Image (cartoon, rainbow, N blue to C red; front, side, top):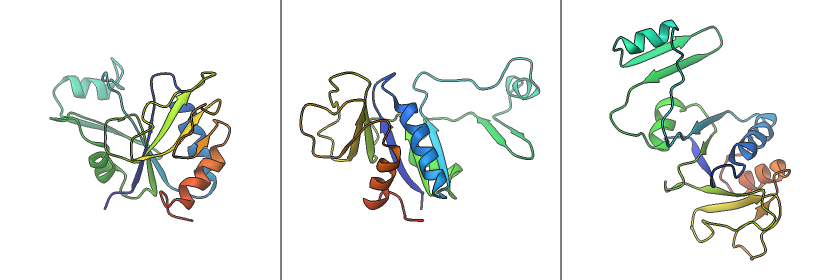
Length: 169
């Protein structure tokens, strides 16, 4: 069974990473084990030219692991885009929660980040899996889910725990 997955969704530069970092800090302080999946819709490359691992990959290796006493990094070719559930099952089976940044089209529980605008507008407000919304200012329209500001990461963490989205520690 995969760990609990909650997706943080919103448009580019809306504050998704700002929220994720604050939520991670709040939940880590409570003893939770967290994994994070960052969706790179336009691709990415984390290897650097000239490094041995880069040379291995360029030579044709399908997967390269770089390991040290405290970290493991994997670069692996895949035949199709993996879903967040597939990634969580494969790489995060021991986590209490996996936060996903992006994957707004996936059928996952979501926190919608509406950004730093003076008048935030929800874009996924009617989606049945929206758990809460986050923005700098409260939205003018009444929503069917709780709203939090960016400085309320502890309150959002409490809400997620109380709502059963994350197990209690």
